[in-house]
Length: 394
Ligand SMILES: *Cc1c(COP(=O)(O)O)cnc(C)c1O
Image (cartoon, rainbow, N blue to C red; front, side, top):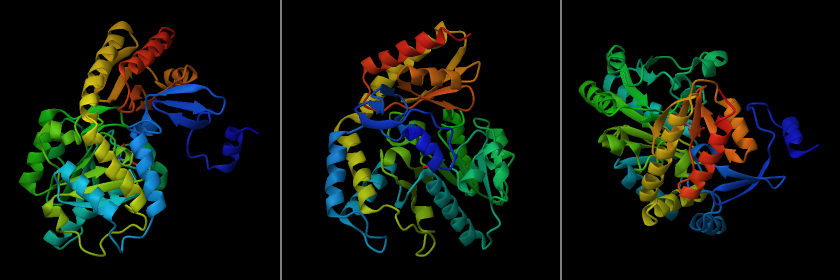
């Protein structure tokens, strides 16, 4: 039996996995057990911002492994304090809670918004507004926030009091707001659901609505945050601040860590005993978080993301022009989607066979989340292979 077959024997079948077995990575390329090379245009679902084997990242993590990996949250460590300070500075918010994943970040944000509501209203009878096509994770809380009935159906009863509005339709939000509304959670760019960016006016109006009604605005930047769209947080492109932001994926760039970060008002609602995590933000993952910010700040990474994404966008727009089956392009920075008039899976599969890894979003969107370190030659390699494959589809 090869590794794929052994994996199929050993794992629960929670994922539809490819029969390619990935062995190692270097730069922007992955290699399978047969030695085939793959251009990475998905970064392990928006995680590996610096590709594979990025020197400062690997060196700092190695050093931390030899110093201390875990100590529990009874104690601060120098590296965890530095990581939290870096997150605080980058988000322009007040207080950080480290967890282990994106789902935990949205769960934690939800709990904190409810805690504030409870302290203010002396009742826990509150509601949350989320959006159709959203994705916030797979736990029984975060999957309820996820506006996709398909992910929820079999797993009820889930948490109650969640209602769904339509992205970029402010009236649909207003219609759901009432005295019980504790929070609105939204991705500035919906990832999983189809790469839908929020319109400028929409996010600004959400911020105003939340101010007006004392509702917690939670921005889920698990996928679009940490520089992926060209600014450290996507919300800086909208000129607003959230009450709470959720981070994961790129904040660890390869180690499991997430965070939710609150402004002063919500930070004050968190009291000892309200929330916790054994691993959450241990010294090992905090060394990664700290290093991620150092790399982004010291190596002009965001400037590069803005430049190279402009080039990618130009090439993608040409693909839209050239091929009838490609209807449009959506996205911000290095978070891009090509919208097809058909199922995207067969094309994504052909790309894999041709040595490029991308993923789908929704049903008919090819989603691209390349590492920040891609250069023009990698964009050209991708576009060349993509065009070659699209010729075979009508
Ligand atoms: C991936 C993702 C999550 C869930 O993160 P996990 O680490 O898989 O739990 C939550 N929100 C958004 C926007 C995501 O893209």
